[in-house]
Image 1: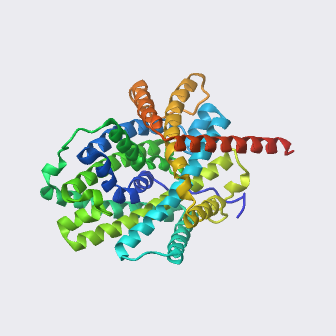
Image 2: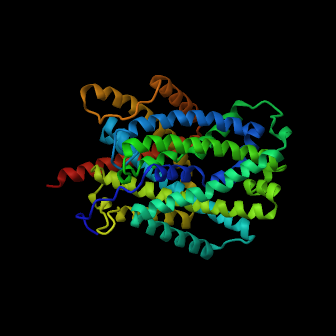
Image 3: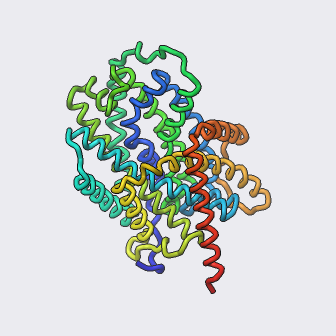
Length: 433
């Protein structure tokens, strides 16, 4: 391990970047949330998800334009920092990293639930620890190797978990109960916003593919394309899967694993097991993509000088940020095994909206910076930029205003902690000769 390590290989192409985005969207929530969507919005759920897809597409366009300016790791953190300076950038990077680690820890809770449902037994602490530690070590090993090895894992997992869903949606169409798909009552504003918020966080994560841009072969070209491609696939799959669940599962609101129940309706017990196994592989894929994003975000914070250079130290053999990978893995393990993440989830949920709004504003700010040549040139320009910005700010603003007081307090405390860390880091840097 050395600062003189060889550069990280740029091994990820368009397909791998898109796979990172798809792995983030098609995770545990994809399989576990259809019942909750239905309980909240009834047969309106697919329509709400489609509308949210439009908002997320506007957000993707903002990420695509700003992402086309950069070749380094960092994603939203780097974009906001370049537009608004180190303090605002650090705040975004800090809460984004914290929320990413919390979200990753929550994936293990979902995986244990899936294992309990499929095995029919309760997992005690020892069994839970064995699963969590083994999976973390496996994913960390691939992330450290990086290059084509990790790219191959991410792409393969994305293909493996998408294929059964696509096949099931196609086979399910003749069996759908069309009457069940027709809303039987008007959708209240409260229910619509609640379902929309769930929808945003089902789609959330596709933008993680921009964080490891420093390991992409041609990030200024491929990051924008991968953002749009992965989100488009996510919209089709989320809307299709929830439509299928409503049309195939009679007691959907009480279903634990709705897509597996839908598969059983079409393909019998074999279909249930195939979809249950796919759901568990989906968690593995999400975890692999999450560790890639988490560690490369920490590396970017180090590369920009906002945290100690020690966090960005690279493997002499692989050129990957081995310290950031190890630290991110340890933090996730600690949160997952102690259950601490459960009390921090409100922070992870609320900060996502702030990140999206920050990137949208950064896109506009960097357009202004183009005039005096202080911003890297964009290779992609989103159409109707003022309209896109208005859609993002309005949609995110509505969801932000619906946050609970607990979520608001969690975000304020998170930002305050980030401010303290920023000031301490700057003071320490000033004292260093």
